[in-house]
Length: 193
Image 1 (cartoon, rainbow, N blue to C red):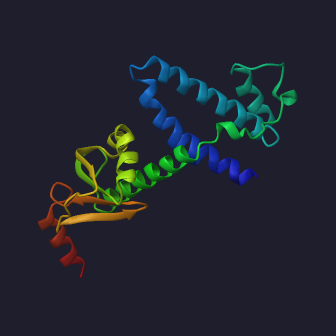
Image 2 (tube, rainbow, N blue to C red; image 1 turned 90 degrees about the horizontal axis):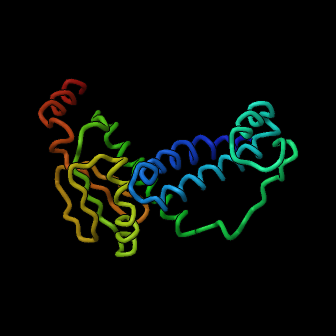
């Protein structure tokens, strides 16, 4: 239980949801801001309740600064599963998005290209459904991969000189031109051999 909670807080909530929540929070859509703030507060409240047996003093202090009912987290109701809050399609879309972002970051890391440098990113979706799901999340892809060019389609041309990654339902293509200096990389590899 403790390990699952830790992984959820650090990996899902902090690494992904809070970072992705910044887009609507800093955007113009007031309804999206309100919904995002409500979700953040709800998840934090429920997480504090789950963490309370492991970290009673810290969770009590945090909980007291959140909107809540009752005097103490100690007597607050234990979180219950609410099936109506489950959305399998949103979960699948998020998995795809995280896999895509991680893959692009891994490619950048392999060739020592910092996130601050824009690169071309072509995403060849295996189906029109995958293409539609990725297009729906274009703003997140742009925010977290920093492309100079972002093309998403089922008929994206392949490049002979590119770094690629295959993810669930798509192939990622990052042309080497602009990603690395080919002459320097060839010289580095020859030196290593």
